[in-house]
Image (cartoon, rainbow, N blue to C red; front, side, top):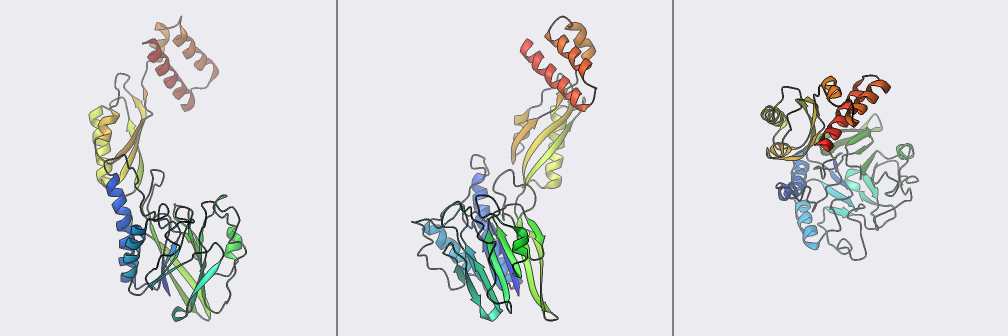
Length: 354
């Protein structure tokens, strides 16, 4: 039996809405959902497991219809869905009475229930959030009803306010696979339990690859065996990149350094640059020029000017600047931390003096 496990799709989210690429990001999230349907069909998957937060918030009726249309295009797979803490089933939620395509099965209650798939010899367990926060460990005591079939659990949470989980108890519960959601970073805990993470990154902190879990449950010598692997598919990644400055670095050479990195890693990705190193004291880096390269979300300049501290001390021996240099030299070893304290302190004092 083959399955594809996704979670935290966040349809309707608009990452970086204040940036030129914001509207593209919204579309890319919908495109990623359509793409996973194509993958299910190509892989001839038996189940599509959606472990919560398919939508970024409680969905509009038109959004449900759109998602249902894509799910209706599944050829071999049945879809099983639960609502998470973002798209929880509130009192006026359109989830309540929505009629899904016959291939789609959704948990509507906040207590454990299951869907049986006799043709697969499988049963899928789960629940849905009926409120944003659930602090009880609802999954700790869940057990399959019958051990002579494939048993799968959909479980969204793992944090204090969102169904805390005891991983050891889950692993000992007897399920052949536990499809987790809520944590956006992909994590394969072991062959029988994993977070696929978000399908597309939804904010700048979600660095690294994003995608889905492809899994197979087979029977070997009378025992079921689960094997899974993470498959990256996201259109973009958020990347945090360090730019290195030296005394010879100019604004032009810094721009070229950034361009080379973006070309090598992929210009479609979204970058946060941090400038490090020691620069010429008369050079001031143009952060806006770096942002103009496109797909640059933010630039931090943590470089420090290459001051001649001996000359500065001679010029300022009778004022606060000279006293600061003297105190730093007397009370600390000249390690990297002390040097940085000296650089940053002098920069602030000189700025105040000017």
